[in-house]
Image (cartoon, rainbow, N blue to C red; front, side, top):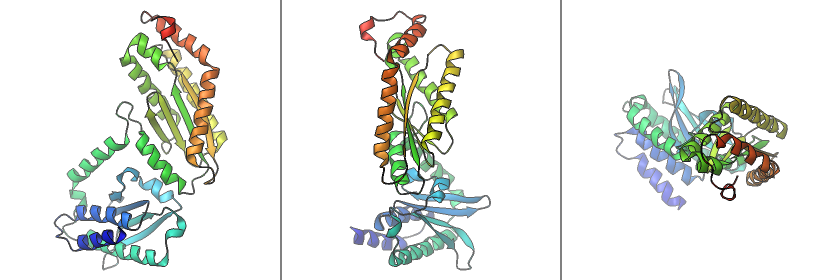
Length: 316
């Protein structure tokens, strides 16, 4: 398989270059597979700094996060006159994988990309429609349509990226929207959707820009915080709780109740999947502890809006 990929790289190198941007995109994707890399990203230098023009996979094309990874290697892209045209970023699955032979191959690849960037036809800034099309499909791929938060696919890809990094401790916070069934049954699904949207807004208000805030499905959300110890994660849970109470003081419809649970991995020896499971258990424990109070409060707030179904049909 690797031999076939290198043959494909060779063919791409001598293809008819009418659209250099598309050739660079194809080369980037094939090169990542051939060397079994986690991420390959090509950035072109412009008047404002560096702009991503190609990334494989597309999903992890966050330049700032890539630059912070300890398992990321950079190659400067220069033209034949030594002028900087951009930077090639390679993210390894393991630090030890970059052998002298692999480094030599990567250096040759960087030279090849540099040549493409220097071509007069390579007006990357002018291919705005192509870039907008890529960005559009990328956003559809990684975002939840209802809330605008990241989705499960993006979250799972970020776990893979973090597990190969030096960004520990990594904290996980599980969040559940309590009583969504009550809201749906008494007020209608329109208000159930509204409750999820409000919960998402509270999460975005509470957490930092660099935190991975995700709706993983239904009424469940998860936040992944890199370089964040357990104590700080607990403080964030408290901030979220305060924001929720503040919302409910001024808005009764729909009422919002959130159960949270957090856990922290202090190193690669503690898999993030296990950390997520522990956070989920802690969240469910809090939910059970406050179950009767949550149910009573939600029923009281919903009672003024509509006629309730029988008691035995309502769950939290």
